[in-house]
Length: 362
Image (cartoon, rainbow, N blue to C red):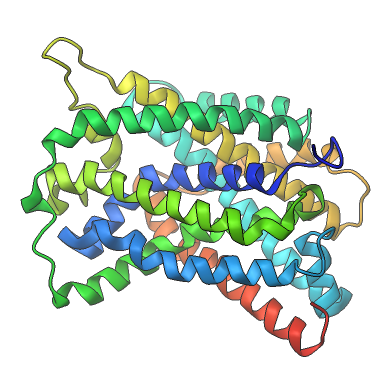
């Protein structure tokens, strides 16, 4: 039993993280892996995994002697109030940008795949209203909901994979030679930022119990992500080849639409739509709550819930103007969002740990 009803377990926190990563993994990862890694793109998760494992050990070290703290507390402790405020403010900007990106991608995906004649603003309002309502109940409620929906999503994901596996062509995945090493490194760089979302979890650190088990559950998360991301690659690159997948705006949706069961059941993508909604709902709720917690620490407030309304209004406005169309949104993600995510997800925690060790603060 948790020590407090207002806290969640590290396992629940990492389920939130996994579902947060799933959303961009389904919409962006296959095309990027195909573009840079070509037929070897399905190996990208194996290259990302060692770097992610280093991040797990970094976070374990940061919270080894600070189990009741959150990441903001540790940043203030390591850098002091002034420099710490600067770094936390940069994290806040990064999180706000990610909120706009996730909300806009949610709307764009439905416009492209299902309801092209519906005003985009309808999808933006719908998802933000739903997340705002749920988050009023607190992080414990959303974590338990995510824990339940995670099981449903996993089942749907595996079932869809089993329907597609017969169409996977080995010729689309091989040969793999030493010439593929550099392309795979480029693919790793472009996708690495997705897994950097592990770091923002710990802005909720004071609401997370069992942080002594970060390494244990982090390793389990790494294994799960490697397996499922490879499965996404096999379903896309393995079925149509990298030359097709790198040109498709929504590769995973494109593949799901091709499923036909016994020549009788078609348009099974309606099942996939359920999984999109589940994943995007949890992802947007997750980032929205993290922003509220960062702002709470930055402004030294006692409660984060009053901050949800202005954050939702910002997300509603920014999501509409972040890009003029989907192509511009993808370009923004690749050229700006990805490098930011790598820095704040991987580089910044390493700097915090090094400085903290030098100053004997962690």
